[in-house]
Image 1 (spheres, rainbow, N blue to C red):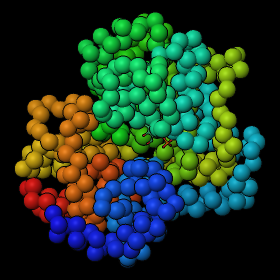
Image 2 (image 1 turned 180 degrees about the horizontal axis):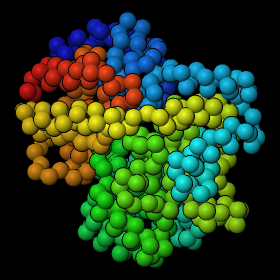
Image 3 (image 1 turned 180 degrees about the vertical axis):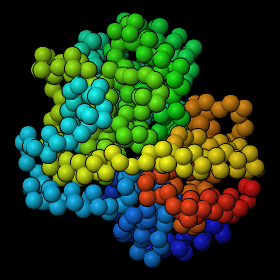
Amino acid sequence: MKKLYNLYEDKFKTSKTLHEQAKKYFPNGVCHDIRNYPPFPMVTDKCEDIYMHDTDGNKVLDLWMGHYALLLGHGNEAQKIGVERAIEAGIHHGTLNTLQLEFAEIIQEAVPQLELMRLCTSGTEATMYVTRIARAFTKRNVIVKAEGGWHGGNSVLSNGVVPPFPKHKKIPESEQTISIPFNDVQITSDILNEYTNEVAAIIIEPMLGAGGGILASPEYLKFLREYCNKTGALLIFDEVITGFRFRFGSIAPLLGTYPDLFTFGKATAGGMHIGLYGGRKDVMNTITTQKLFTGGGTYSANPMTMAIAIETLNRLKDMDYRKLNTIGDNIRNFLVDKCQKLKIPAYATGFGSYFCLHMLTEKIEKPTPHHFMTLGDKQMETDFKVAMLVNDVFTMHAGGALSFMHLENETIDTIKQAYQNSFQMLDII
Ligand SMILES: Cc1ncc(COP(=O)(O)O)c(C=O)c1O
Protein backbone atom coordinates (compact mmCIF):
# COMPACT_ATOMS: atom_id res chain seq x y z
CA MET A 1 0.00 0.00 0.00
CA LYS A 2 3.00 2.24 0.62
CA LYS A 3 3.68 2.24 -3.13
CA LEU A 4 0.12 3.42 -3.84
CA TYR A 5 0.40 6.29 -1.37
CA ASN A 6 3.83 7.23 -2.75
CA LEU A 7 2.30 7.41 -6.21
CA TYR A 8 -0.51 9.59 -4.85
CA GLU A 9 1.84 11.93 -2.97
CA ASP A 10 3.99 12.32 -6.03
CA LYS A 11 1.08 12.91 -8.41
CA PHE A 12 -0.71 15.41 -6.17
CA LYS A 13 2.26 17.05 -4.40
CA THR A 14 1.00 20.63 -4.68
CA SER A 15 -2.35 19.58 -3.20
CA LYS A 16 -0.50 18.44 -0.09
CA THR A 17 1.08 21.87 0.34
CA LEU A 18 -2.21 23.66 -0.34
CA HIS A 19 -4.09 21.46 2.12
CA GLU A 20 -1.51 22.31 4.79
CA GLN A 21 -2.10 25.99 4.03
CA ALA A 22 -5.88 25.45 4.19
CA LYS A 23 -5.54 24.05 7.72
CA LYS A 24 -4.48 27.52 8.84
CA TYR A 25 -7.94 28.78 7.96
CA PHE A 26 -10.36 25.85 8.17
CA PRO A 27 -10.74 22.97 10.66
CA ASN A 28 -9.39 19.88 8.86
CA GLY A 29 -8.53 22.26 6.04
CA VAL A 30 -12.03 22.08 4.57
CA CYS A 31 -15.53 23.51 4.94
CA HIS A 32 -17.33 20.19 4.48
CA ASP A 33 -15.74 17.13 6.07
CA ILE A 34 -16.62 14.87 3.15
CA ARG A 35 -14.09 16.90 1.13
CA ASN A 36 -11.24 15.82 3.37
CA TYR A 37 -9.80 12.32 3.03
CA PRO A 38 -6.43 10.76 3.84
CA PRO A 39 -3.64 11.30 3.18
CA PHE A 40 -4.78 14.74 1.93
CA PRO A 41 -7.43 15.81 -0.56
CA MET A 42 -6.79 16.71 -4.17
CA VAL A 43 -7.15 20.50 -4.43
CA THR A 44 -8.97 21.63 -7.55
CA ASP A 45 -7.98 24.67 -9.51
CA LYS A 46 -10.54 24.50 -12.29
CA CYS A 47 -13.38 22.22 -13.34
CA GLU A 48 -14.75 21.94 -16.87
CA ASP A 49 -17.11 19.54 -18.60
CA ILE A 50 -16.59 16.27 -16.67
CA TYR A 51 -13.05 16.97 -15.54
CA MET A 52 -11.32 18.40 -12.49
CA HIS A 53 -7.92 20.05 -12.89
CA ASP A 54 -5.35 20.68 -10.17
CA THR A 55 -2.19 22.77 -10.07
CA ASP A 56 0.06 19.75 -10.71
CA GLY A 57 -1.41 19.44 -14.20
CA ASN A 58 -3.64 16.46 -13.37
CA LYS A 59 -6.91 16.08 -15.23
CA VAL A 60 -9.26 13.83 -13.30
CA LEU A 61 -12.60 12.46 -14.52
CA ASP A 62 -15.24 13.67 -12.09
CA LEU A 63 -17.93 11.31 -10.79
CA TRP A 64 -18.86 13.59 -7.89
CA MET A 65 -20.03 16.49 -10.07
CA GLY A 66 -20.38 19.08 -7.32
CA HIS A 67 -22.12 16.88 -4.75
CA TYR A 68 -24.21 15.32 -7.60
CA ALA A 69 -25.70 18.72 -8.51
CA LEU A 70 -24.35 19.06 -12.04
CA LEU A 71 -26.28 17.15 -14.67
CA LEU A 72 -24.98 19.21 -17.58
CA GLY A 73 -21.30 19.23 -16.68
CA HIS A 74 -19.00 21.89 -15.27
CA GLY A 75 -19.03 25.29 -16.94
CA ASN A 76 -21.91 24.44 -19.23
CA GLU A 77 -23.85 26.72 -21.56
CA ALA A 78 -26.81 26.98 -19.18
CA GLN A 79 -24.52 28.39 -16.50
CA LYS A 80 -22.87 30.83 -18.88
CA ILE A 81 -26.14 32.16 -20.27
CA GLY A 82 -27.68 32.15 -16.79
CA VAL A 83 -24.80 34.27 -15.43
CA GLU A 84 -25.23 36.74 -18.29
CA ARG A 85 -28.96 36.98 -17.65
CA ALA A 86 -28.36 37.48 -13.94
CA ILE A 87 -25.71 40.15 -14.44
CA GLU A 88 -28.09 41.94 -16.78
CA ALA A 89 -30.89 41.68 -14.21
CA GLY A 90 -28.74 42.35 -11.13
CA ILE A 91 -27.56 39.27 -9.26
CA HIS A 92 -29.34 39.93 -5.97
CA HIS A 93 -32.58 41.84 -5.59
CA GLY A 94 -33.95 40.85 -2.20
CA THR A 95 -37.44 41.21 -3.64
CA LEU A 96 -40.09 39.12 -5.32
CA ASN A 97 -38.57 39.00 -8.81
CA THR A 98 -39.69 37.95 -12.27
CA LEU A 99 -37.02 35.24 -12.63
CA GLN A 100 -38.42 33.60 -9.51
CA LEU A 101 -41.84 33.41 -11.18
CA GLU A 102 -40.37 31.96 -14.35
CA PHE A 103 -38.55 29.31 -12.29
CA ALA A 104 -41.63 28.40 -10.24
CA GLU A 105 -43.72 27.91 -13.36
CA ILE A 106 -41.23 25.39 -14.78
CA ILE A 107 -40.97 23.55 -11.46
CA GLN A 108 -44.70 23.38 -10.87
CA GLU A 109 -45.28 22.04 -14.35
CA ALA A 110 -42.69 19.31 -13.70
CA VAL A 111 -44.00 18.51 -10.21
CA PRO A 112 -47.71 19.42 -10.12
CA GLN A 113 -47.94 18.17 -6.53
CA LEU A 114 -45.97 21.28 -5.52
CA GLU A 115 -49.20 23.23 -5.12
CA LEU A 116 -47.30 25.81 -3.09
CA MET A 117 -43.58 26.06 -2.58
CA ARG A 118 -40.92 28.19 -0.99
CA LEU A 119 -37.30 28.68 -1.95
CA CYS A 120 -34.21 28.92 0.19
CA THR A 121 -30.51 28.44 -0.42
CA SER A 122 -29.72 24.88 0.69
CA GLY A 123 -31.21 21.46 1.16
CA THR A 124 -30.41 21.79 4.87
CA GLU A 125 -32.67 24.80 5.18
CA ALA A 126 -35.40 23.14 3.12
CA THR A 127 -35.54 20.09 5.38
CA MET A 128 -35.42 22.30 8.47
CA TYR A 129 -38.37 24.40 7.31
CA VAL A 130 -40.42 21.51 6.04
CA THR A 131 -40.27 19.71 9.36
CA ARG A 132 -41.20 22.94 11.10
CA ILE A 133 -44.27 23.23 8.87
CA ALA A 134 -45.19 19.60 9.55
CA ARG A 135 -45.04 20.16 13.29
CA ALA A 136 -47.15 23.29 13.10
CA PHE A 137 -49.74 21.72 10.79
CA THR A 138 -50.18 18.51 12.80
CA LYS A 139 -49.58 20.11 16.20
CA ARG A 140 -47.36 17.13 16.99
CA ASN A 141 -43.64 16.98 17.67
CA VAL A 142 -42.07 13.69 16.68
CA ILE A 143 -40.23 13.60 13.37
CA VAL A 144 -39.35 10.20 11.97
CA LYS A 145 -36.38 9.66 9.68
CA ALA A 146 -34.49 6.67 8.32
CA GLU A 147 -31.25 5.37 9.80
CA GLY A 148 -28.53 6.61 7.49
CA GLY A 149 -30.83 9.26 6.06
CA TRP A 150 -28.94 12.46 5.40
CA HIS A 151 -31.01 15.64 5.25
CA GLY A 152 -28.21 18.15 5.72
CA GLY A 153 -26.67 19.53 8.87
CA ASN A 154 -29.76 20.76 10.69
CA SER A 155 -30.05 19.61 14.28
CA VAL A 156 -33.60 18.33 14.01
CA LEU A 157 -32.59 15.64 11.54
CA SER A 158 -29.20 14.64 12.88
CA ASN A 159 -30.48 11.59 14.71
CA GLY A 160 -29.43 8.29 13.20
CA VAL A 161 -27.17 9.80 10.56
CA VAL A 162 -24.05 7.85 11.42
CA PRO A 163 -23.47 4.95 13.74
CA PRO A 164 -23.06 4.37 16.56
CA PHE A 165 -26.43 5.81 17.38
CA PRO A 166 -29.11 4.83 19.83
CA LYS A 167 -31.51 2.93 17.63
CA HIS A 168 -34.89 4.59 17.41
CA LYS A 169 -34.40 6.43 20.71
CA LYS A 170 -34.87 10.12 21.25
CA ILE A 171 -31.49 11.79 21.74
CA PRO A 172 -30.77 15.28 23.06
CA GLU A 173 -29.48 16.86 19.83
CA SER A 174 -32.68 16.01 18.06
CA GLU A 175 -34.92 15.55 21.01
CA GLN A 176 -38.07 14.61 19.16
CA THR A 177 -36.57 12.75 16.22
CA ILE A 178 -36.60 8.98 15.96
CA SER A 179 -35.03 6.80 13.32
CA ILE A 180 -36.42 3.75 11.56
CA PRO A 181 -34.63 1.04 9.58
CA PHE A 182 -34.92 1.81 5.88
CA ASN A 183 -36.93 -0.70 3.86
CA ASP A 184 -37.79 -2.86 6.89
CA VAL A 185 -41.58 -2.74 7.14
CA GLN A 186 -41.87 -4.96 10.21
CA ILE A 187 -39.44 -3.17 12.53
CA THR A 188 -40.55 0.22 11.23
CA SER A 189 -44.14 -0.69 12.00
CA ASP A 190 -43.23 -1.78 15.54
CA ILE A 191 -41.37 1.48 16.18
CA LEU A 192 -44.07 3.69 14.69
CA ASN A 193 -46.72 1.97 16.75
CA GLU A 194 -44.94 3.19 19.89
CA TYR A 195 -45.40 6.81 18.81
CA THR A 196 -48.64 6.76 16.82
CA ASN A 197 -50.33 9.91 18.04
CA GLU A 198 -47.11 11.84 18.36
CA VAL A 199 -45.71 11.61 14.81
CA ALA A 200 -45.84 14.88 12.89
CA ALA A 201 -44.01 13.61 9.82
CA ILE A 202 -41.91 10.91 8.30
CA ILE A 203 -39.11 12.35 6.18
CA ILE A 204 -37.50 9.88 3.85
CA GLU A 205 -35.12 9.91 0.90
CA PRO A 206 -36.73 7.81 -1.84
CA MET A 207 -33.19 6.65 -2.48
CA LEU A 208 -30.80 6.80 0.48
CA GLY A 209 -28.00 8.90 -0.93
CA ALA A 210 -25.19 9.40 1.56
CA GLY A 211 -26.58 6.35 3.38
CA GLY A 212 -25.45 4.06 0.59
CA GLY A 213 -27.37 4.45 -2.67
CA ILE A 214 -30.32 2.28 -1.72
CA LEU A 215 -33.67 2.70 -3.40
CA ALA A 216 -36.76 2.57 -1.19
CA SER A 217 -38.86 -0.42 -2.06
CA PRO A 218 -42.31 0.47 -3.42
CA GLU A 219 -43.81 -1.68 -0.61
CA TYR A 220 -41.94 0.29 2.05
CA LEU A 221 -43.12 3.63 0.67
CA LYS A 222 -46.66 2.31 0.35
CA PHE A 223 -46.53 1.19 3.96
CA LEU A 224 -45.32 4.64 5.09
CA ARG A 225 -48.03 6.31 3.00
CA GLU A 226 -50.73 4.13 4.56
CA TYR A 227 -49.39 4.75 8.04
CA CYS A 228 -49.54 8.50 7.42
CA ASN A 229 -53.05 8.30 5.94
CA LYS A 230 -54.20 6.36 8.98
CA THR A 231 -52.57 8.52 11.65
CA GLY A 232 -52.61 12.01 10.16
CA ALA A 233 -48.81 12.22 10.04
CA LEU A 234 -47.34 13.84 6.94
CA LEU A 235 -45.12 12.02 4.49
CA ILE A 236 -42.16 14.06 3.24
CA PHE A 237 -39.89 12.98 0.39
CA ASP A 238 -36.45 14.52 0.61
CA GLU A 239 -35.61 14.68 -3.07
CA VAL A 240 -32.51 16.84 -2.75
CA ILE A 241 -30.59 14.11 -4.59
CA THR A 242 -33.34 12.26 -6.47
CA GLY A 243 -35.21 15.30 -7.83
CA PHE A 244 -34.50 15.93 -11.53
CA ARG A 245 -31.78 13.26 -11.43
CA PHE A 246 -33.72 10.22 -12.61
CA ARG A 247 -36.45 11.98 -14.60
CA PHE A 248 -37.51 15.56 -15.19
CA GLY A 249 -39.20 16.10 -11.83
CA SER A 250 -39.84 13.95 -8.80
CA ILE A 251 -38.90 10.29 -8.54
CA ALA A 252 -42.37 9.57 -7.06
CA PRO A 253 -44.02 8.44 -10.32
CA LEU A 254 -41.31 5.79 -10.69
CA LEU A 255 -42.03 4.41 -7.22
CA GLY A 256 -45.80 4.73 -7.13
CA THR A 257 -46.13 6.69 -3.88
CA TYR A 258 -46.61 10.42 -3.50
CA PRO A 259 -45.75 12.41 -0.37
CA ASP A 260 -47.59 15.35 1.17
CA LEU A 261 -44.48 17.51 1.04
CA PHE A 262 -41.21 17.51 -0.89
CA THR A 263 -37.79 19.02 -0.63
CA PHE A 264 -35.58 19.60 -3.66
CA GLY A 265 -32.08 21.02 -4.15
CA LYS A 266 -28.90 20.15 -6.04
CA ALA A 267 -29.81 19.29 -9.69
CA THR A 268 -32.78 21.66 -9.54
CA ALA A 269 -30.53 24.68 -9.90
CA GLY A 270 -27.70 23.35 -12.06
CA GLY A 271 -24.89 24.09 -9.62
CA MET A 272 -26.28 27.08 -7.75
CA HIS A 273 -27.21 27.06 -4.08
CA ILE A 274 -30.85 26.18 -3.72
CA GLY A 275 -33.35 24.55 -1.43
CA LEU A 276 -37.01 24.16 -2.30
CA TYR A 277 -39.80 22.86 -0.11
CA GLY A 278 -43.46 22.55 -0.83
CA GLY A 279 -46.42 20.35 -1.58
CA ARG A 280 -50.02 20.27 -0.37
CA LYS A 281 -51.62 23.68 -0.38
CA ASP A 282 -53.46 23.20 2.92
CA VAL A 283 -50.21 22.21 4.63
CA MET A 284 -48.10 24.96 3.08
CA ASN A 285 -50.78 27.47 3.99
CA THR A 286 -49.82 26.89 7.62
CA ILE A 287 -47.15 29.49 6.88
CA THR A 288 -49.96 32.01 6.38
CA THR A 289 -52.60 30.80 8.81
CA GLN A 290 -50.22 30.30 11.75
CA LYS A 291 -47.83 33.10 10.76
CA LEU A 292 -45.19 30.40 10.81
CA PHE A 293 -41.64 31.55 10.43
CA THR A 294 -40.09 29.86 7.41
CA GLY A 295 -37.81 31.38 4.84
CA GLY A 296 -35.56 33.92 6.47
CA GLY A 297 -32.83 33.70 3.85
CA THR A 298 -31.21 36.86 2.53
CA TYR A 299 -30.40 35.10 -0.74
CA SER A 300 -33.56 33.04 -1.23
CA ALA A 301 -34.76 33.12 -4.86
CA ASN A 302 -31.86 35.36 -5.85
CA PRO A 303 -31.77 36.15 -9.59
CA MET A 304 -28.37 34.48 -10.13
CA THR A 305 -29.64 31.14 -8.84
CA MET A 306 -32.96 31.53 -10.61
CA ALA A 307 -31.43 32.41 -13.98
CA ILE A 308 -29.00 29.47 -13.96
CA ALA A 309 -31.75 27.16 -12.71
CA ILE A 310 -34.13 28.26 -15.48
CA GLU A 311 -31.51 27.78 -18.19
CA THR A 312 -30.58 24.38 -16.74
CA LEU A 313 -34.16 23.14 -16.38
CA ASN A 314 -35.06 24.26 -19.89
CA ARG A 315 -32.26 22.07 -21.21
CA LEU A 316 -32.89 19.12 -18.87
CA LYS A 317 -36.48 19.03 -20.12
CA ASP A 318 -35.24 17.76 -23.49
CA MET A 319 -32.59 15.39 -22.20
CA ASP A 320 -32.72 11.63 -22.64
CA TYR A 321 -33.04 10.50 -19.01
CA ARG A 322 -33.65 6.93 -20.14
CA LYS A 323 -30.20 6.84 -21.70
CA LEU A 324 -28.61 8.41 -18.61
CA ASN A 325 -30.17 5.78 -16.36
CA THR A 326 -29.35 2.92 -18.72
CA ILE A 327 -25.68 3.85 -18.76
CA GLY A 328 -25.73 4.08 -14.96
CA ASP A 329 -27.24 0.57 -14.91
CA ASN A 330 -24.49 -0.59 -17.25
CA ILE A 331 -21.75 0.66 -14.89
CA ARG A 332 -23.53 -0.77 -11.86
CA ASN A 333 -23.89 -4.16 -13.57
CA PHE A 334 -20.18 -4.07 -14.33
CA LEU A 335 -19.52 -3.44 -10.63
CA VAL A 336 -21.95 -6.15 -9.50
CA ASP A 337 -20.06 -8.58 -11.71
CA LYS A 338 -16.70 -7.42 -10.33
CA CYS A 339 -17.94 -7.73 -6.74
CA GLN A 340 -18.47 -11.43 -7.31
CA LYS A 341 -14.83 -11.76 -8.35
CA LEU A 342 -13.25 -9.65 -5.62
CA LYS A 343 -11.30 -11.22 -2.75
CA ILE A 344 -13.14 -8.97 -0.27
CA PRO A 345 -16.87 -8.64 0.56
CA ALA A 346 -18.09 -5.91 -1.77
CA TYR A 347 -21.52 -4.83 -3.00
CA ALA A 348 -22.65 -2.43 -5.70
CA THR A 349 -25.77 -0.38 -5.04
CA GLY A 350 -27.57 2.60 -6.51
CA PHE A 351 -30.23 3.37 -9.03
CA GLY A 352 -30.13 4.74 -12.56
CA SER A 353 -27.32 7.24 -12.91
CA TYR A 354 -26.23 6.90 -9.24
CA PHE A 355 -23.92 4.10 -8.13
CA CYS A 356 -21.95 3.19 -5.01
CA LEU A 357 -19.55 0.43 -4.12
CA HIS A 358 -19.49 -0.86 -0.55
CA MET A 359 -16.48 -2.73 0.79
CA LEU A 360 -17.33 -4.45 4.05
CA THR A 361 -15.39 -6.12 6.80
CA GLU A 362 -17.52 -9.26 6.57
CA LYS A 363 -19.58 -11.08 3.99
CA ILE A 364 -23.32 -10.64 4.44
CA GLU A 365 -25.82 -12.70 2.50
CA LYS A 366 -28.44 -9.99 2.10
CA PRO A 367 -26.91 -6.73 3.33
CA THR A 368 -29.28 -4.06 4.64
CA PRO A 369 -28.59 -0.31 4.80
CA HIS A 370 -27.64 -0.90 8.44
CA HIS A 371 -24.88 -3.33 7.37
CA PHE A 372 -23.56 -0.81 4.86
CA MET A 373 -23.44 1.83 7.57
CA THR A 374 -21.84 -0.25 10.28
CA LEU A 375 -19.58 -2.72 8.49
CA GLY A 376 -17.77 -0.50 6.00
CA ASP A 377 -14.05 -1.24 5.74
CA LYS A 378 -12.87 2.34 6.21
CA GLN A 379 -9.22 1.65 5.36
CA MET A 380 -10.15 -0.22 2.20
CA GLU A 381 -12.54 2.57 1.18
CA THR A 382 -9.78 5.16 1.64
CA ASP A 383 -7.21 3.05 -0.22
CA PHE A 384 -9.74 2.61 -3.01
CA LYS A 385 -10.44 6.32 -3.33
CA VAL A 386 -6.71 7.02 -3.51
CA ALA A 387 -6.24 4.27 -6.12
CA MET A 388 -9.05 5.69 -8.26
CA LEU A 389 -7.44 9.14 -8.07
CA VAL A 390 -4.10 7.69 -9.08
CA ASN A 391 -6.09 6.30 -12.04
CA ASP A 392 -7.51 9.77 -12.73
CA VAL A 393 -11.09 9.27 -11.53
CA PHE A 394 -12.66 11.13 -8.59
CA THR A 395 -15.23 8.98 -6.77
CA MET A 396 -17.50 9.48 -3.78
CA HIS A 397 -18.71 6.46 -1.79
CA ALA A 398 -16.51 4.53 -4.25
CA GLY A 399 -18.95 5.51 -6.98
CA GLY A 400 -20.68 8.63 -8.18
CA ALA A 401 -23.43 10.10 -10.26
CA LEU A 402 -23.28 10.51 -14.02
CA SER A 403 -24.15 13.68 -15.84
CA PHE A 404 -25.45 13.90 -19.39
CA MET A 405 -21.86 14.68 -20.39
CA HIS A 406 -20.63 11.24 -19.23
CA LEU A 407 -22.44 9.18 -21.82
CA GLU A 408 -19.75 8.69 -24.48
CA ASN A 409 -18.51 5.10 -24.84
CA GLU A 410 -14.97 6.29 -24.32
CA THR A 411 -15.88 7.84 -20.96
CA ILE A 412 -17.66 4.70 -19.79
CA ASP A 413 -14.64 2.59 -20.78
CA THR A 414 -12.33 4.97 -18.91
CA ILE A 415 -14.44 4.62 -15.76
CA LYS A 416 -14.52 0.82 -15.96
CA GLN A 417 -10.80 0.64 -16.68
CA ALA A 418 -10.03 2.84 -13.65
CA TYR A 419 -12.06 0.47 -11.44
CA GLN A 420 -10.24 -2.55 -12.87
CA ASN A 421 -6.81 -0.91 -12.41
CA SER A 422 -7.66 0.12 -8.85
CA PHE A 423 -8.80 -3.39 -7.90
CA GLN A 424 -5.52 -4.69 -9.26
CA MET A 425 -3.43 -2.06 -7.49
CA LEU A 426 -5.06 -3.03 -4.21
CA ASP A 427 -4.58 -6.69 -5.03
CA ILE A 428 -8.22 -7.48 -4.36
CA ILE A 429 -9.04 -9.10 -7.70
C1 LIG B 1 -30.98 13.97 0.61
C2 LIG B 1 -30.33 15.24 1.06
N1 LIG B 1 -31.05 16.15 1.73
C3 LIG B 1 -30.53 17.31 2.13
C4 LIG B 1 -29.22 17.62 1.88
C5 LIG B 1 -28.64 18.93 2.33
O1 LIG B 1 -28.49 19.76 1.24
P1 LIG B 1 -27.42 20.95 1.27
O2 LIG B 1 -26.06 20.32 1.25
O3 LIG B 1 -27.74 21.74 0.04
O4 LIG B 1 -27.67 21.71 2.52
C6 LIG B 1 -28.42 16.71 1.18
C7 LIG B 1 -27.01 17.03 0.90
O5 LIG B 1 -26.20 16.23 0.52
C8 LIG B 1 -28.99 15.48 0.77
O6 LIG B 1 -28.26 14.56 0.12
